[in-house]
Image 1 (cartoon, rainbow, N blue to C red):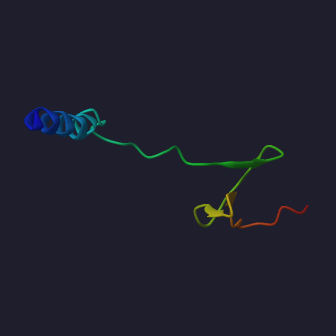
Image 2: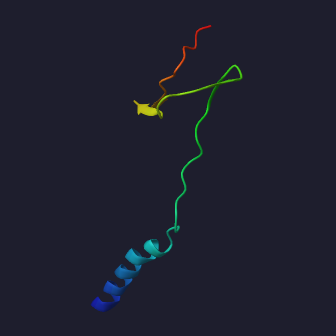
Image 3: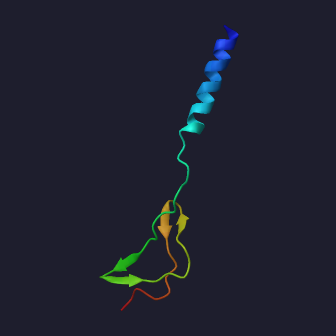
Length: 62
């Protein structure tokens, strides 16, 4: 009986490893548009207190 439980436990651990996708791909680049104008950033976004924040090269003021 102990062998059956050991085999069942081993199968439960191995099955998720077999079903994983082979490769992962990077997400598409994020673009920022304000009033139809695409803004350029000089660094990738940073997560600050659950918000996605950007450092912009130019001011949003007109």
